[in-house]
Length: 291
Image (tube, rainbow, N blue to C red):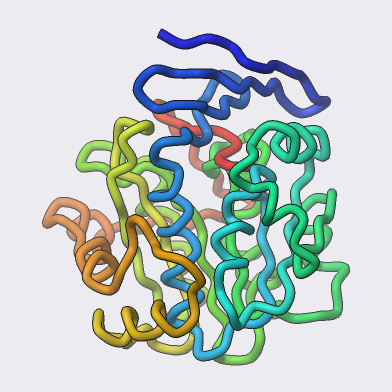
């Protein structure tokens, strides 16, 4: 059972804020759950902290999407961060979230946050600055969907990689459902596409109860990801304000160990997302994920 607290429509999508019994307040866009009050921390800590912790000194961050504000909130907990550019295409979704998601009020007011309303590709191409970490917090790459072009080999090669600072820059993206039956939909293809562009690519996943599935992320760089669980914990203690509820070094080590079935798929995946070679994915799609 749930009740509608607020509802609205933009030129891109319909938005609702629901009060659900099991998961608290939930943000729903175009009828698809984006995040729920009770467990969104699992998604956002997993998206943000591994990349920032593996970087030696992350000061400048770019978020593609992320209009909900939760990704920015987690980034801004890092003491090293000096600038966060958050680029979302839908101003009305951002304003809706600023109004109703009070958990992110402080993040939206932080002077380190630069809020940009634009297409992420166009914004990155037009900027002269580079970033230590670029984060993709977008819809899944469904052919004909709003974000497919932000998952292609050419986009990673010609837009994302040149905007990362030298060899040490890190890119991380949400990568769709990564469960035992759902990981072949987009997760394995995102992983394989990034492998064509970056020297080191790490897939990882976590169960998010409100999604009723395991969710995946993929982190990529031309520098190795070689921190131990103990080293990650030390950096967390030194760098992050407040206590993380989900992620620590041991959790990340566990989350980046895939099951046998998923490992086999990743190892044997041949599909690469290209501008010409879209492959339509039927079934599960949490569209406009956190955008």
